Image 1 (cartoon, rainbow over the protein chains, first blue to last red):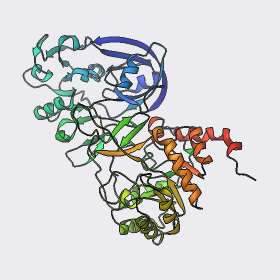
Image 2 (image 1 turned 90 degrees about the vertical axis):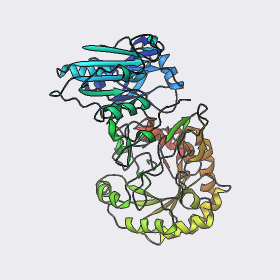
Image 3 (image 1 turned 60 degrees about the horizontal axis):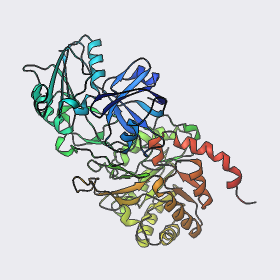
Length: 252
Length: 275
């Protein structure tokens, strides 16, 4: 883990109102694994950092994907090339891939695409076949950069692919290693069908480094642990989904 | 120093220049393990954050077994923030910590707004505050600090009661009780409904209360509340505090304390005691 003052070097819209921002941060880019995140500080800006899954990473550049949902993300979306942020990372546990296992199925809903390009990269490096099932409310909100050996789409309004959620577009049969990210309500449904799936969850977060205990995740063992440290990737059936807030609202 | 609840047990904050640390206060502990409150536990507000963690922690025995031996090898003192649901529990905690290598003192938390029993309830009544302080004082030889709540009509009354009951120092102040509603659900944004407000939003309020306490007692006062820079710390020192604690700023910048300490060198003349 390191703190890097990083300039914005890339910015593109990958779906309606959904932006990928690339920051030059070679140290983090070289170290990050799929499912890990960076905690981003903007000055001037809100008091606390904002956590984002790493979307993609090259030799020098770390990318995140976001939509303006509150003051922090609105300011981030307005950054121009050369503007600097502080990145703290890579943070969190990340996905575990079994190179000797079956292929992987990436299951993403909406902004749940966030960790998937990196997951696809890591899976392919291990020689695993990648199926990516991606859902959104409507065609314009589907991420245009999804890439896999097999790609399946779902839209809630039926404008592209299977009508319904990403779960409705899952292929028949054994999905292999399932990695999922999306609204917590969707992940709860994933847990019901594939208890062994790995899910990357979203919570409110303070420090991102394990000290504030603000990102509590209710586990089936009865404890609350920290999304930033033990998570944000968990075995799907290890979470008490009814006790995890399903919608996060942002006002600052 | 690092404020309680913002530096864990001293092992969880990366990238902090620990050679600059004057000391730390541990996360608040109870006699027994506590699960803490369900999520959401934190919410950001303008220039601040509300938290209701609920003093999640492993209990005193685990702290003594797993952390105190580490503290004993560190170059800075570690105080343990102690909490109870009854006066006796505070006393018992003080007794357990007495003589434990690595424990440099106790900070008696009679100001946590996020527990149903004890906590702040002891800090809003002078007799109760004195009873807790005395219970701790009589059960340990360690330095006893008492952390005060701002949620009182006259903080000097509580401060004097704690001083008379044997406090060696007073920490002023803990978080302010706050609340925030989600306009979509119509429900409070924290599961505990209320939380403790910290961060720059509370700083002028905290400086004022620390100043009042410093004028009311003769024991040292440790200033706390929204300190993020050396300038913020200098304000508390000018208000009469003898030391300061940095809290929420560490969540944003893990080395906030290091920067505060380095920056304070610029104010040596301003802050020098009169000859």
